[in-house]
Amino acid sequence: MSSTNRGTERTGFDEYPTPAWAVRRLMEAVHFKGGHWLEPCAGEGAIISTISRADVRWTAVEIQRRFEPLLRKIPGVDSIEIGDFMGYKPRAALHSKRPFDVVVTNPPYLDAMEFVAHCLELSTHVAMLLRLNFLASNKRNVFMREYCPDVYVLPDRPSFTGKGTDSIEYAWFVWDSGERRTAGKLQVLPPTAAVERRHVVADTGRRKRKASGIA
Image 1: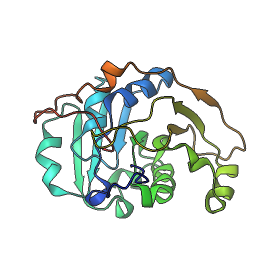
Image 2: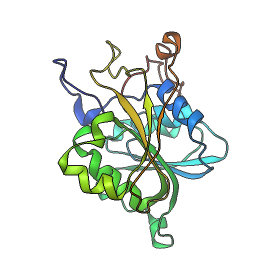
Image 3: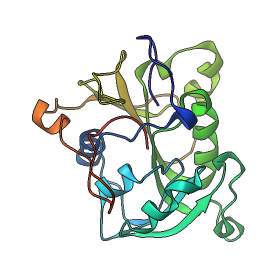
Image 4: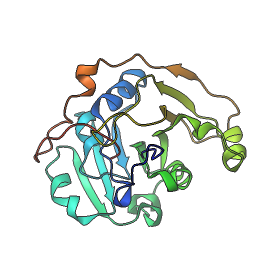
């Protein structure tokens, strides 16, 4: 996801690898249990590579087949599904109401609400990197009042293009049970040093590149 209010054009499929530092701040603040995790917008695997936990096995869903060879090189990736996530129905869902333990992703801007809803059908815990103003709007009002998340605010604006920071603030939105609740927690995360924000994403067996945007 990236805001385009600064005159930039969106890339195809909203392709913006997630900054590693933003993922680290989430993992420091929220202690998810291990198990079977899902990345529904896997891209080249920036989120998966950054988390890199021995107690986690991943299913990666990615709409672009060209990323499949990169994803196969990442330790911990057990399954790769190529296709549109909104049509994704895991085989494990036949035996479990929610077949995944955790979802961590940065969804495409135009489909963010649809991704949230689908992920809550599949996992007990869902963490989404979203614009802070996702909390607002009449369109999402009923949902946000009935399924209020915990919100972990990034005080530093991410760079989604490698050419300067985004035009708006971002936060990790975390749903911990998928059950209805009318209030959540708000926590402002610590700032990240500029040197870490400039650092490349984890090496996934491909060329290294500056951390920027969604994966």
